[in-house]
Amino acid sequence: MNDRQKSAKGGTATKKRYEGFTVAEKDAMKQRVQEQKPGAADGESAVLEKITEMSDVDRAMAKRVHAVIKADAPALTPKLWYGMPAYARDGGKIVCFFQPAQKFKTRYATLGFNDPAHLDEGGMWPVAFALHKLTATEEAKITALVKKAVS
Image 1: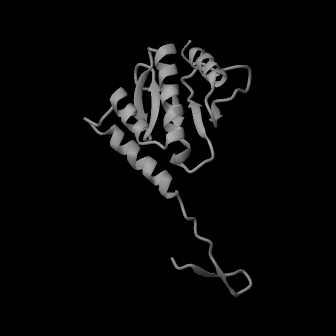
Image 2: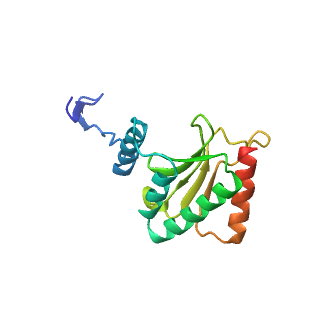
Image 3: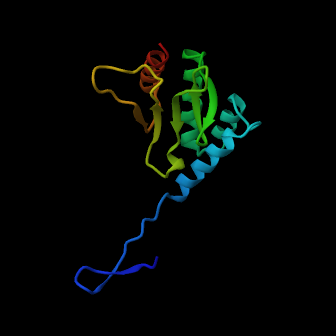
């Protein structure tokens, strides 16, 4: 199909093409396919290796988030998920993940929770949190969230 088509009035109009996924989104999907292959690197060593590849700011926050989750939710298993550090229940269901800012060129990193996390509170509750810096206050909030998520 070409980019030009007849308009309703008989003239020609340029058809706007959907560009699809960004390069970063395509890369994340390719990483996810690789993660699912038998024998793919998984577990804590893969997560720690991915953290070392991050920018300085993202790396510092990812290390602290990893330490908090390991200390306060030892039942969660570290693994890669779309190329990001993630933490899963037995059976592989992702409870939470750390999305570095550099991954999709955003201005902040994200700590996200998926539906296996027990964060339910009424009819609506947050499942993603922007991380611009990580102080003791933010670490305490993350600790509380992670404990609630695995309760």
